[in-house]
Length: 372
Image (tube, rainbow, N blue to C red):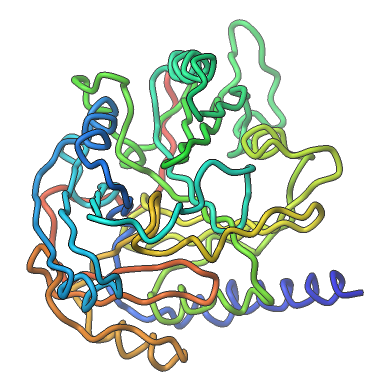
């Protein structure tokens, strides 16, 4: 009965997302996710690691314990690095915060879809090579769990068509790699491309792009708790909330779903960038461990995501109207006006005042077919 009530609530909220609120999304000018923020106590190792994926330091700063307490409610000094992949500065960046002292162990190496878990997604040209690398690390007793890459057709491009050797199937091969301080999802396209959704710099050692989208494993009482992303931040609900799971081979393989398992899914995307999308997952059947208490700034792993906007004050007022408690607007470690707010689903966001970027984001999603 409880699950039936939750499902009804989900459907009602889905109606709100896709009919009423879509017509009244505030014009906040919000970006797609600008940065993934990762906590660590070993910044040099993290910078070297992400350098293999094409990320290079473009800025750095220091935070005293007093400044960190004021900005992030973490009374610990830190060194902060902003990293960018190639020339893409409009979305998909990385911020590494090296805390002098960690507040705890973070979510850590955990079962897929553990509550509080975060995953960041990259396009790659060679998913098999990446999987082989992490499989080798696993044999050396390092804490990496790569799932088996699986081919899927999430856009239903092949639906109703007859494919074979000469009319080859179009789709993606994807997998996840779960780690102690970072969780990856990789995908490789076959037969098509989407301009603006993943750009691979040829000089990147592992032939990977900026972060294209971001997964959040959550547990909420009602999907109404996600409405602020639309009505305060100005993001668009991707579609009606759906229940999917082991019937879809992509999610089944990526999240290691047992037979009979399923989850709720809801996506959000900026009206100003097709990239930097948010994807929320919540278990329906099959309980998962809850590590949400360790999903916070000051602990290792992915602990925050950022957006930028030319209308920072508007979003600040809107989140307060939704009953959330943002910090005051002040300059962050990079001298940018910003504030931090934590959503009821456990996600932490920093909103940054920024008028423009060098890279022009794509706002209309289009599929271009290739001959591979």
